[in-house]
Image (cartoon, rainbow, N blue to C red; front, side, top):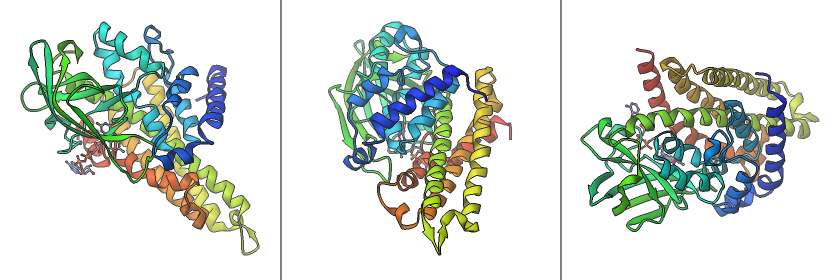
Length: 378
Ligand SMILES: Cc1cc2nc3c(=O)[nH]c(=O)nc-3n(C[C@H](O)[C@H](O)[C@H](O)COP(=O)(O)OP(=O)(O)OC[C@H]3O[C@@H](n4cnc5c(N)ncnc54)[C@H](O)[C@@H]3O)c2cc1C
């Protein structure tokens, strides 16, 4: 892909934003297990939150390459947790934008894209996340309202979300009984509990308990019992972004390892002069090159509207490939940095702790293979 001057200008502006507003603070935010809410507004101000959303709701229409560039540049700060929470609206809003009523969209979307409100997506439950069709959290109609009872877990932005796109059972068993409802984060009867994690420390992750939570009936997103399809379509966007993120974080590992290998001296020469180190770097480079080429091919196909079953299958496999590349590169980078790679404050130390969530969240590896096989008729 040859990027246009507009793409390159956008890259420059995001790079400057990351260098000034994120990179200097990201270690402290990770240690504090949070980041300032004000960052949403600042990210919105340079058009990051509204990227790819309709102008009518405060967004900036943009092709898939802009989103790829944004992901690559935000990744330079080396914090997947920051990326997950700052952009949780990218999994929370799309079903609403595609299927919500005009009134609901006007009420929720502009404020989120302006960085004034935070949006989250809640699918996963304590009883399981992979088997979405069996989710248990239930909503029943009562006097012009939905009354919601049940639990969600591992929800990104769960503590501070102002709006939660919630998957609930409104009908019978299976995927055909699932709906999506927009639930205000401050709804009475909703209890939120923060969760401690292996990585993504500055990301807000929560368990949500719904007990008799009442929301107006018109908060239903799209048709009743049509939520499963929306959830599956939404996963495609999330998986592409996760693949781009994995590739970008793997590149950060390569860059940090190369920089270190050039400076660090052992046995009288720079680390990079040792053949073993050079080979590790080339193994990283090889995996990065194949992942990036595949990622670009997928974005190109998406831009051409070629997003049928074959694209979905390849996307599932790309997510696995990209996250395996990330795993390999994070491991190699920490090894090249030696003891320093084990110390907090290096980017590869943090990224190493963030690998597994990329291989589990948004559809775990095993599920990706099953889904790909099914899409390919195997
Ligand atoms: C930090 C973090 C943030 C998250 N953010 C969100 C969020 O914002 N919103 C949200 O809804 N969810 C979120 N998730 C949840 C995530 O999507 C789920 O963890 C994921 O889908 C897997 O579900 P599970 O953890 O319940 O694992 P399970 O479904 O219990 O599966 C456990 C393991 O068994 C494997 N497995 C399951 N079924 C099979 C099978 N048939 N064959 C072989 N292996 C199988 C899985 O691949 C997995 O490895 C987040 C998770 C984390 C860790």
